[in-house]
Length: 335
Image (cartoon, rainbow, N blue to C red; front, top):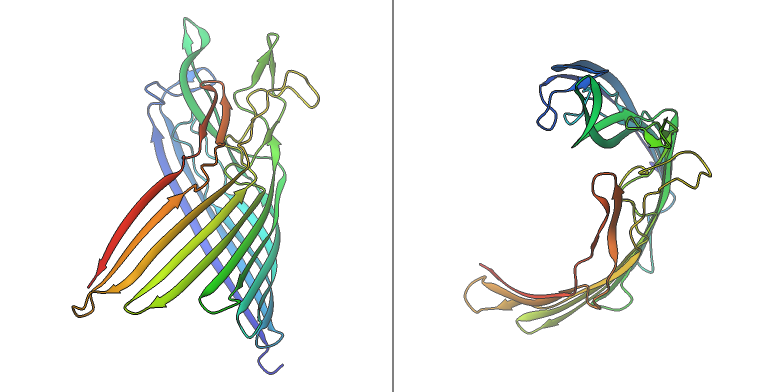
């Protein structure tokens, strides 16, 4: 095929061994099924992960590819756990296909890729109150602990990423990018079960992918003007995201359609603009010495939103606003 097809393959073998002892949890002795005492971890895992990538040169400036690979996140035990039980590795298998192009006499570039994959044994963290035996009665304290479990069944991920860059005239560069990400994690039983009307409920709760907006986009403008003995550079960028979850599971979930459910809130969507103006590489007339003087602004239009929102049993409803408009300046000297 006249060297138009490129195939790459690989295998990675890994073995993990983890050993540990847990003496205290948040200042107290671990308790499992009402029995307190030191907890031990002695676990190991091994795995082989393959990768295959096929790239086709359609022309000098157009390339398509397909890639399949697997990977994993190591297992272990949570040191903030009440029980210190081992959890298994999380595994993923992903197929990706994409297109890479250049055109407009190589003054423009467009890349796009799409991917889809499956997750198994997704590692999920749950937080709750420490339970201890007081006078023969199982009692909750205000200390918090965290349990890590493997979600049952198979989860999934798919998405699209694209970026575009254009130099329409000398010294001016325009750019744009977009990402769509969807993650599905199977519902998982909370080891700190919800209690309603005196009845313990172990209904599996919905699990959210944290800190990952479904939609994200950005645009950039860069302009550069060469001068005698210096360069003027201007940069402007705008960034959008559709908001994200800060906590991975609902505070109270009694079952589908139940009005007693208390769902996790999601942060606000936002559009933030930043800018920089610089007089760069000023010739100081002393060898290779150069000075750059710049001013910058973050959140230029002083946009305000609650980017972090969360709800928990221990701290209730809480959130954080984004940073307000900020200005600054900088001087750099290079010799």
